[in-house]
Amino acid sequence: MKEVISVFPNKINHMLTTRSWDFIGFPETVKREKTVESDIIIGVLDSGIWPESKSFIDEGFGPPPSKWKGSCEGLTNFTCNNKIIGARYYNKDKDFKKDDIESPRDTDGHGTHVASIIAGGLVSTSFYGLAKGTARGGVPSSRIAVYKVCWSTGCVSSDIMAAFDDAINDGVDIISCSLEGIIVSDYFNNAIDVGSFHAMSKGILTTLAGGNNGPKIGTIANVSPWSLTVAASRTDRKFITNLKLGDGTTLEGFSVNTFDPNGFSPIVHAANVKRRGFCVPNFRSCLPKPLNRRLVKGKIIVYDEFNTREEEALLGGAVGMVIRTNISSTTAKVFSLPTTLVGGEDGIQILNYINRTRDATASIMKSYEIVDEFAPYTSPASSRGPNTKTFGILKPDLSAPGDNILAAWTLANSPTNLKIDRRRIPYSIKSGTSMACPHVSAAAAYVKSFNPLWSPSAIKSALMTTAFTMSAMTTPEQEFGYGAGLINPLAAIDPGLVYDANKEDYIQFLCSLGYTNQQIHYITGDNTTCTKFVKQYDWNLNMPSFCFLTLPLKNFKVTFLRKVTNVGLASSTYNVKIDSSEKLKIHVFPDTLSFTGVGQTQSFTVTVEGIIPRSTIISASLSWVDGTHKVRSPIVIYTI
Image (tube, rainbow, N blue to C red; front, side):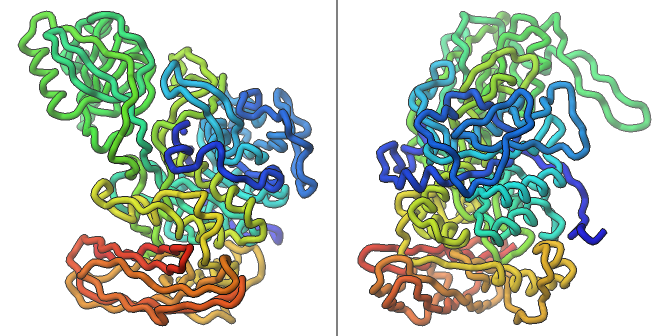
């Protein structure tokens, strides 16, 4: 068919938040271009939205901007307002399940949570008394356009592509997509990559979640260079959930436990209260052993793994769970019954107590908040680089708050997403790169409100080169964990210089990867060919970061080509500053850049040479510094 640009497998993608804005130095009182901010429209591709939430009240809002071409017509059980100015839903296969609502209304909670982090109004709230404060979005004056692409069965690629096209045509300014795409080898086979390319071509930046498959390296998803990939970091809010044993011992665990303690209950090891498993003959496999309800009812169950069957414990009549886990690689979460997570040594102490005590008892306390003095650092679950699709492109790009984030929720689902959990609450606590991504979406919108004519890559560059530096002491994977660092929206509105790139730059990048003209057509949707482009190395794409994969224990020498555009003072001079390991020799030419006007561009080269061991990451940084700005870019040389 002539109108079909490309065909690729229709994959299932997956959905991946009050303290956070203050933690990154972005208080309610920040300066704003309120009129411009009110004209900015953020398109949210997710599970829909709960329009009645207090976060989306449109009091004080005027009509939608005149550029808006979207719609909220023909919907049942859903009404837009001057805050939520457009809503669409997509399910090409008509694969609706019992709990799905055929409208943009959110029955999951994920989309509502994400949208309120970006542009939610100010609401005084808490989660059952925890995390009390003001829940707010980063750009509360901005408008929201909803594109529901996720259902109980997942998020289908064809629906995502259709939503990208509609969002672009509707007139959104930023697209926020907290969906974890399947890692595939080619950009033209990925709906999110193709959709975000189309958005970039029309001047729209797409922010993407990096995924929640950490801390294993090489797990980062959504790695296209024309989008902005976000890792999740922790804020200084930490929830502690103590466990009191019947012998008077108190052990410190963690979770988000909203239940008040109800005295002491018997505590048992899950291994001692399971029924006999059912094995399949000739297949060398057994079905999981279910809990014995007679031995479980009224008791606290101690599990030996994090991936517990919470519903099983509830149905068995358990009154609580203790989960033995590696605390350093686990994120606190909400449970449907009193629960705490404990580390290895404490877990052994609990089992020893159970084994030596005839009537062992325990009590799980309600969570309380403490200050995490090590924050910010990358969340354990946040996916890590390196970029396995294109080695010369550093991913993730940035880090943003993603753990223990309080934000709006749907009243159609429980905070645990379990049917057996009957609780319904308008604000919930969630963690993941899905929560980090909308923080960057809001920061991008904030930067755009001061710089309306900037390209997507200029906004991305401003956010990356002004980010707060993070420490390798708390994130061993270094830039593969946090990218350029933690977002700093206030600094990003005036970065001084930007690394800009346009559609042709990205096409040249793809052509240099060996893509055919037909494959380029699949991505661009137009008749562009590779004929006029000179082949270059992937690491020479004009990114605000430098990344190179080398062979272990071999001398290497690589030269990066870059150019920066002056967006600061008309007359300015920048000097280079290098922070580097002694294992690398770095030379920049020229080492001084002088500008005589805004919009002027200067080129430079960075040559890095050295020798490094196997499975090693060596980090450095390059900064262009004048009397006002520090334009910092990470340099990462690594071996595998």
